[in-house]
Length: 146
Image (tube, rainbow, N blue to C red):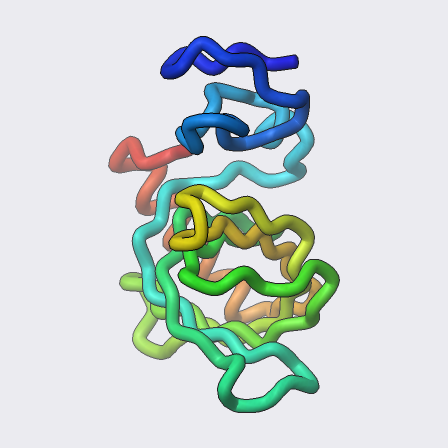
């Protein structure tokens, strides 16, 4: 169990947010398992669930990004295991970065309002990978790691 520093109640292990108050728990477990560093990234992402209807397409904000994946913040949870076509508007790139990913985690961050959607990248064209690397490096130099 993990003790929440905000409400002092115990939440089940492995949770990103407190089971009771919904606030983010301080945890380094997720970062430790990652192969690539993540940086905070308030960038616009358009995604389409492959094989779903156009009504399931969304434009959302990213919470963070790394070479291996991205965290999206959405008003609608994405089904775990869904394959996505992503278009990321990165400030250091003239065109949106297009790639494929898969939903690996969905966490409610505000009850019935906002969800964190963890995406791993499954297909990243080399030029787009370079754009992500450039953005990450620029943000790291400015102190934006997360």
